[in-house]
Image (cartoon, rainbow, N blue to C red; front, side):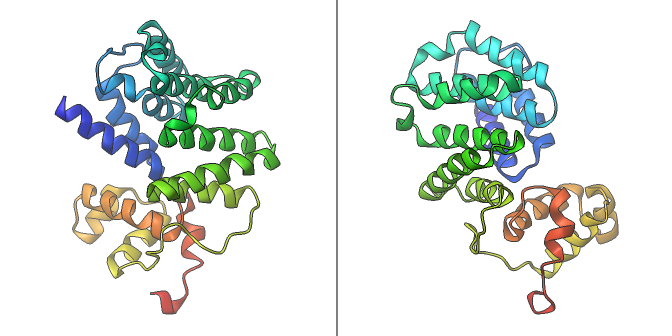
Length: 244
């Protein structure tokens, strides 16, 4: 049980920082697709399981988790788990079904009593709306997610929502995370990662373990206002010589 909680914490951090592959590695250890225990933390982390699946392209696995949650009665435990299950179903749905499912999740009675999950559903809905080019409505949900995460002190999640809001065309001048300066080693690692090198290859060049390289990358993403490795190149171009 202790290890499951530890892996859940790491998965949530990975999801916030865009490290979806590692998030999946953590969640699949806790609950295989289509298998969901009725105990804690499994029923509390259906949204984590499903998002890790969806963000790594494992849609059928995500739907297997949604089905398992239903079979185990997760939506009936409480208003809390009902929101988690409904948000998960929306996240795993086809585009022609996702919109109404997101609306239904956010409209559940007392859904706003659970601001953390409520904000995550707003974020997922906003991302889906932006992807389907409904940017006006996307901004409403992304703003709601950003404000809630900031209020909760969930900085990495606030940064992720903030980035999505900016990508929707909203001009922003501030970042939720104010620690914007990179250390010399972080800058070196970021530049190597931006060239396409793997963590292992970077570690070999800098005499570091691949895990240490990964930890540095996780810390520097929020400083650059990004959530994934793919955005490193553009982010580094914004750093002036004085910043270094």
